Image (tube, rainbow over all chains, first blue to last red; front, top):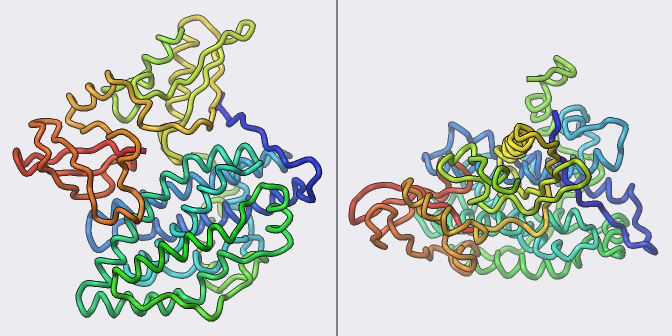
Length: 268
Length: 156
């Protein structure tokens, strides 16, 4: 099958410390964040509280899977050896995954899911906007699309945070519970380490302060309109970027990977 | 050759062609091969691969060797939909997208909605029922004048 493949070539700044291995590690983090969260969102299909959300959540999941596919495709090109996107999604074990712990948490109720999606979008939207200036041409090109899609996610989820926060006693209680439950997970999205620093030096990753200030602004504004407490987390879970995941991931992968593990190499 | 490539209908919205949607970006002859640059609409549009294969098949059928390349930048925007494409969408009951800058997509515009004219009766007394419709690229609206529901092709 003569499928077209993206022709953009990656370019790592010549005199930087970033290497293909660094880029590969970034693609695993980014790809895994999007695959796992996309999977969690898709679990709502058929179970959402209203039909419009039964459309919205899987559609947002689809946008996220688009990014996951791009990351894994790109990684497969870098690694070579006949690897494909499916190898990364379906044949890696839990400790090989590099996503943040927030995205693997069970969906909880609609309040938890929508608030988590809001936090994720409030981060990813300025991230992609900044990434349009990345020295990696492939990532910059993808960022042009993803930024526009994430803008819709921010709006859709932000509006729900407001409706539920400034809603009934029950919806406000659930949103407050969601805020408390999610607070310890948000910080991990902003973690810096030697990998992020090397990639930032190479101009591949943006300055995280820009993203944080935009995130803080959108979150503060939205929570204020929603009559919810201000977001002031004092603690952040860590470990996802090094493959130290919560027990939930095992169950998630058992479902996600079952078919490829049970019938290796099967095709539709 | 461009006409052949651009005449391929969109597999989902068959009333418009890939040319109408601005998906075909460039066509060149490279030796004996016709190279066609296409751009995906949404990141995870399930029709992207189908579109590329259809274009390849159409060009191959015309007796030339086709090679389709997926080009990501500049990113596709609904602004690239031709006037013809917009008219066809409207005739089919789908409100065409507003120009860029009218997305109302960011947080500064929570709950504000640009007025989308009804494709049947042109009234702007319409409201959004669902942010996502039959496909990710469309939203569902209803007209308060003629009461008919309709799809809106979202601005991207």
